[in-house]
Length: 273
Image 1: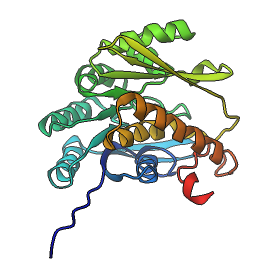
Image 2 (image 1 turned 90 degrees about the horizontal axis):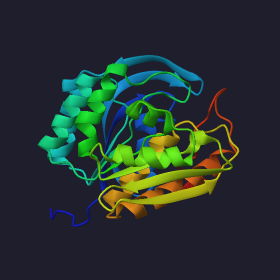
Image 3 (image 1 turned 30 degrees about the vertical axis):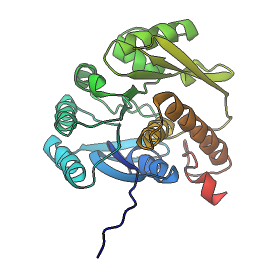
Image 4 (image 1 turned 90 degrees about the vertical axis):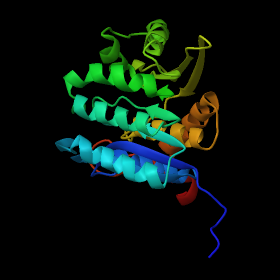
């Protein structure tokens, strides 16, 4: 039988599993599929969680996570890689070794540290390993303000401090930094994309959407950026398209009730609405 000629745009997500389905691997795979790409996964941790919070975390041994990465990349390959929850420094180092071994490209790093419920998803001792081993491998890193404060060890309270923080984060080695400004709670939610080589900042600003259904927004955005890069978009275009997708998913998801806490965004709004 003749081998088919069509190929997929492939995205590998390396992240934790969310039993509630709103964040983590589940949100990543929904996003990747909704944006027309083929998603594969390497699970780093199992979590027992729902819309109200994280009840338990069961880390996957680092060698088993890297076995998943190896199995995917040696056969299916990946046009982009999204990295989410990693939990420990041992796992961070193992993932970095695997990505270097496979010469992974279009790497999007979401430095997940704390869930929206306030539950910690990254051990304190692992922050330094994240900076040292994964930032230099990343094409785009996507911290929110609390994560940036931990990474830099200083408060970020306004737009000026955001701009300074984006530049400081850019010195850690990634090709681009998308610093998410939602925690400033201004009428407009502004994210800053800093491109260190060009020493240029692009601002993506949009009105706030009145909704409590924001579970998994960071996972969704970073996965959407990875999908854009997998399809051949440049970083600016991939970020812009990902922001537009997340905005529409938030608006569509605001109309739904799911669970007793923070519900998810509507990943498949284009197909269900």
